[in-house]
Image 1 (tube, rainbow, N blue to C red):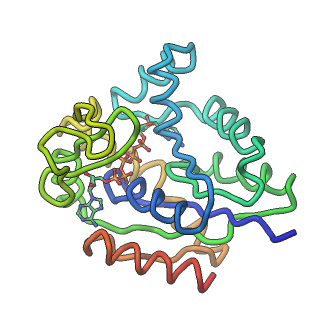
Image 2 (cartoon, rainbow, N blue to C red; image 1 turned 90 degrees about the vertical axis):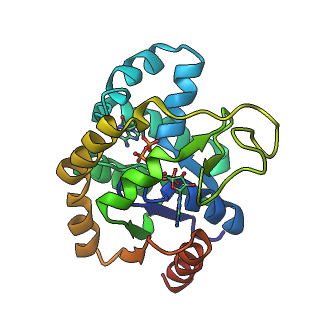
Length: 218
Ligand code: AP5
């Protein structure tokens, strides 16, 4: 059996992790696991976890490690993850990174490569304030990746909306939380020789090209 391929997408909020994780997962026939999407799904289904997560997400804070790790553990145990996964938004703290290592060790696997999509703060705010999303998780940008019809999803025709946590003040706080709690993972994965820095200011296609190269070379 082929060794499973686990890829961790690292980068600040709005760097393009979700956009690229979808493309990568499709190209490599892997599952895309976004913890943000999983929390939003719980929110939509009005579960207890969804209510708990909402109180943190709306403020731009991280959901506590314990609940986040348990949710990912359950997701990774599903049969569609046997070949690996593209992890988007997890891990986000050193505690989560250690937990992921322990989880994958149970399947005799480990993280293969960690693309770090680097984008300066001023670009992040512009990207998130222009982001339009569909209820099924498709992501557009008013200028850089517009739908065919304004505010309408290309595929299912549903109305697009802006995420509650994409308000400029919350975005600034999310960037601060990223610097304080997630940026230490850059060193963590550099020390493990897994980190590959990608210039996230390029076009969406340019970033995809560099990412595919990074995965092929890993
Ligand atoms: P989450 O949904 O993961 O948010 P995030 O990490 O802040 O990332 P974003 O989804 O905002 O951005 P992205 O990097 O995916 O960018 P995108 O591709 O959309 O998490 C939300 C919340 O959930 C967290 O704040 C936290 O509360 C909680 N949470 C989630 N995971 C957690 C965890 N592990 N632990 C604890 N709490 C957790 O792109 C952004 C925009 O830019 C789009 O409009 C896109 O079209 C555009 N764009 C993308 N690439 C380019 C490009 N190259 N050029 C021009 N525009 C581009």
